[in-house]
Length: 392
Image 1 (tube, helix red, strand yellow):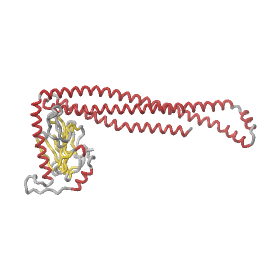
Image 2: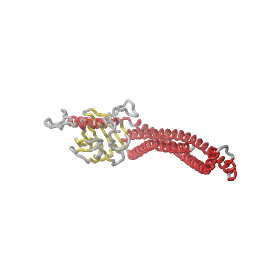
Image 3: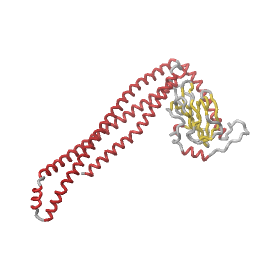
Image 4: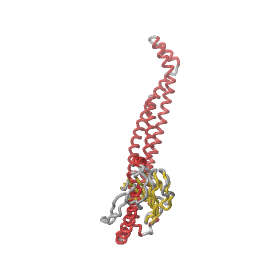
């Protein structure tokens, strides 16, 4: 009886602990999604008066909608989890209640038995009526242990009742938390409807002025192409290629040990800044004019809060600090035969030749045309890589 009670208490504690542990990743994910939405909202507010930012606004709004849908899905998962846990907890409480009832009935019988046999003369007569001395000693032992047994069973009963009350309290907390999650989900769905309407409004504005936006895209394409050419030139120069500029210039030998360390950390590199990815690697088409190809992205664009620090993702050497139209200041860091490129910086705190460590600040992000976004690229030799495959 005692062992069963202890086992039930341990299982209850373990269930509570596991529930708390399982909730943490969901809470962290929700907090991250909400932080990203807050960053996007701020940039949209800054862009509201700029007609040139319509395409960027649409990208931001759609990213926000994607985050909001994830929040709703996360709430759905939490609600299902709470529903399962509440069901299991209720089963556990029912079993505990049945156990308490059994203990209570057993204890009542013992108390009644003790009351009936409270007269010492009855005990003596019962002992004297024994068939032999062995039976007499066993009856004597029973009488001596009856009082301690009553106390022990009373303690077990009290512990079981207290544990039952605690489980009822835990169930009440679960139900309250489940209701809070449901309320959050309703709010998120309402916000989602507004955000989808906002997206439709931006799409309508884009459709009205196709020629204007085509001109803007053409100008953007020139900026992207100029940036890509310059990065290719700088990388080739660092690798000792023919695009290195003046022919007599000596090139530093490539640190292959550092390159191997960088390669070994694929998928584990820290993010250069904290925020949502609003433009991904590769070729994309216009979200409204489906047959219109956008300038290819050799990296990713991360929306961040104004004044955010930009950090080196790995140990390396600063090869160049340049200024490019549409991208402001850019920093190229070499990691053996790998390179990372950080653009759209307002201030830079490093110079060519500086050695940097993982997580070291190299500058702060600039706000360009209302957008505070870090443009980040990863290269293996002269080939651009998808940064999201390298970042953790």
